[in-house]
Image 1 (cartoon, helix red, strand yellow):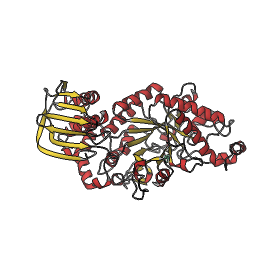
Image 2 (cartoon, rainbow, N blue to C red; image 1 turned 135 degrees about the horizontal axis):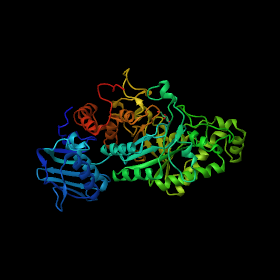
Image 3 (spheres, rainbow, N blue to C red; image 1 turned 30 degrees about the vertical axis):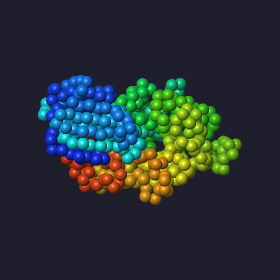
Image 4 (tube, rainbow, N blue to C red; image 1 turned 90 degrees about the vertical axis):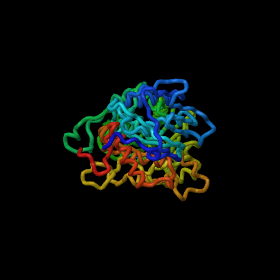
Length: 520
Ligand code: TNX
């Protein structure tokens, strides 16, 4: 691939809203200076300076200036920029807009500007012209499952950079599940002493006997998570933490058996995939336990939204256990299955009392009992959940598995690595429209945005996460920034192949090549 091709203004991903290219170029050299919004300046100097060797000295009237001028522009996160042979002038609505302008400039410099260190010394040129950009949605997310497979902190930080490079602004971290508990909670040490480790895996990326037997684990300390949050904030990304209750909880029950429906049963952290039938009991002490967990979550993550999970909760244990049946009668519930909604409501109310909005997967709508107002529903089993949520007065994130699940296989090729079975091509992701055409009138604003899901049952290494996420996440960025009308797959595909895969390659991302799988 040619790493020297500079990227034209209209080839940026996601494609900017309006672009007026001009034939001239701006040459950046050792005398080029930079000024303006401090974070954008710092980020540009560190990344572009590091890759190009340009000193990019700060000077009062820099050749490249980032100014924040709210009011003049299109709204939150928007920016406008003009590139002439004399310099670059950026006007941004806010620091996020300035950061996106800096990201755009880095793309325009070509793939060489995405290396960690200097490979070629120049010349470094920018195409001239005017460009204006603003996102379609305020929630442009990617979810990452750290529970099924732990990723070292440095990989999570790298993932943050990759999201920022595509102007995505939410990283939803799935921190707990049947197969692992990944967040240290002060005062509840067994959650990570026991819950963060499992003896093997039922099916990994390459299901050999040796692979199955391999123990797996890891967790993040509060300091690790604070570092991730702060690094994400530098990139204008909100980290939305998820602690999944009251199902997907076997790792927590293995750590503290009193949380389960049978306190005398000793469970292991689950080694199987799928959904464990072991769920939380709905005792007051378990409510208190998870209030404590969420209090800690709130203390680490400043996100206004905290995810309580709520997906895939089998009611079998509640129905079969005498104490659970009694408990549900005592609470005045119509059936033991309604403990699902009852428990979630308690958690969502607790978060509301702490000034946070609860986010739940769309099963929360079936769980019985209305969610507190302000709660958000993630519509994953298609778009019905999102539509129902909006009808009930909630905001929604559209993230249907039929469109934007990146653990699903991306081509019908016999050599694809073990994926979740369904086919989700680059084109499927690209063509997704998060606002269904049959949304009730006047309710489109309740679709806050969209998010891709990277579940990791089969993604047991950073390479495999790269492979699943890219380049489909590039397509999701287009979905999150542009209306369906403004998108064209053939044109996107050409842009991606010519300018962006070389950029990902320069970054060291092990994306899925367009012409077939990697050999591992
Ligand atoms: C469903 S999406 C799940 C996850 C799995 C995923 C695999 C959701 C809320 N639950 O637990 O990892 O399918 O694609």
